[in-house]
Image 1 (cartoon, rainbow, N blue to C red):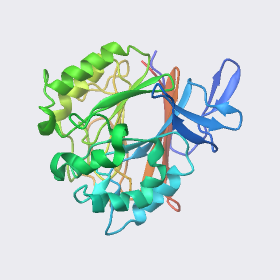
Image 2: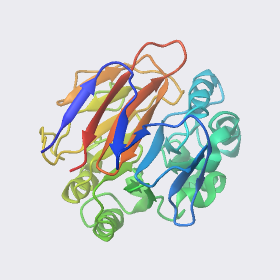
Image 3: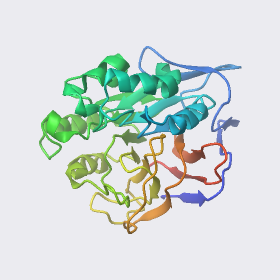
Image 4: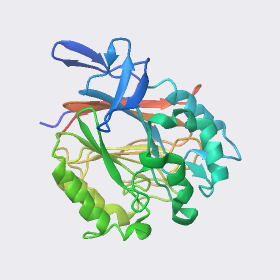
Length: 316
């Protein structure tokens, strides 16, 4: 049975596992990657167990013209342990070495625990060459830009929404076939995927990108639970839905747009179907607490802003 509970104020979610209450986040420790790619958090009592992990981040981050937003979100990340997802458009305007120097001043402080996704602004530089140089092996194969890793008991997939640069995103394309193979090779209970351009968005600037639909279809067929994107400079949460935008409380994927990393804000257009929460005036990061049987989410706003959003769901 699909369970959903949403609360509009910040709260602390506790998961009771084997009689032990595990806080959804730990305010101590130094995250690191294990040899198998699993992120672990060193806390007062040792390493965080594989059944609970934290994935936190946003997209659309650092612009050398004004780093105040990126600085505000970087300050949040320094207080939240776990794996950081940088969801594309990390360094404006063109992903050059000079642009990444500004990213490095802010989110670079958590670079050692960041797993990035490629954005269209990084792709302005030939082959996104400095993006791959800056992040190194953490960004996956420079020939593709998509990869996957394990985080706690969850499988995490990072895709490349610059479709033209990787042979397309259509059914039968190299990335779509890789994705289906990866899902088949990792038949775990819970899966989250993130990349830059969303399939669904109420943002007035970009909106949803139908080119991504075959990748959503593959994730849906593989029983994925959560998708996180950026591109539109706002925060938006959708209810569980199918790849054709129909509400699906049994097998639907919940999508978040978190283009709130610090670049700027942009207005919404008309609400897209299944859009549940929207905010376009607050920088912040999306924190996902990943348990063995489900997940909780919390939007952490920049200091001084009252907006919040939180809730939890079971995996499929």
